[in-house]
Amino acid sequence: MSEASPEASGGIDWGALAHALAGISAVILGGLMYTRPWAQDAFALLMIVAAVSAVYFSWKHAAWVTGHWLAMVPVTGVAAGYLGWQWGFTLAYVTLWLAFIHFVIRGLQSLRGAKSADPS
Image 1 (cartoon, rainbow, N blue to C red):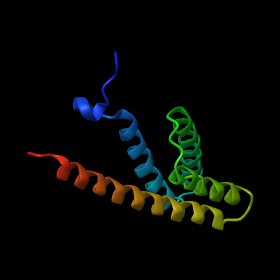
Image 2 (spheres, helix red, strand yellow; image 1 turned 120 degrees about the horizontal axis):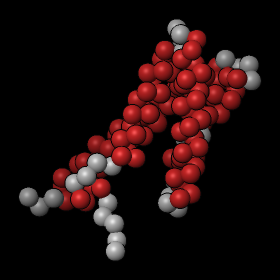
Image 3 (spheres, rainbow, N blue to C red; image 1 turned 90 degrees about the horizontal axis):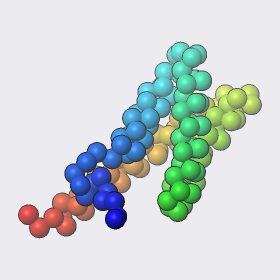
């Protein structure tokens, strides 16, 4: 018996929802890290969780794409920040925004593609 995807059955894709919420939270915490010291650690933790989950899901679904490797750049910035180079956190935040914009654009393209393929 095969499982239908959440999109095909009209259900919620909980993985995508969790990923989106984590991404938006990271963007907000990244902005706060310049004014609230605690936000820097929370931002770094989210970046590490994102990197580990990207590797895990890429491996689990055999879905290695360039974007997954580029998702590691913010983690590199976080590591540089904790090693004493404060610009590392800014690198992580800027590359997070680039990824966020990229995924919004890809999501819009996907929606347009789905609408043009829908005959109704």
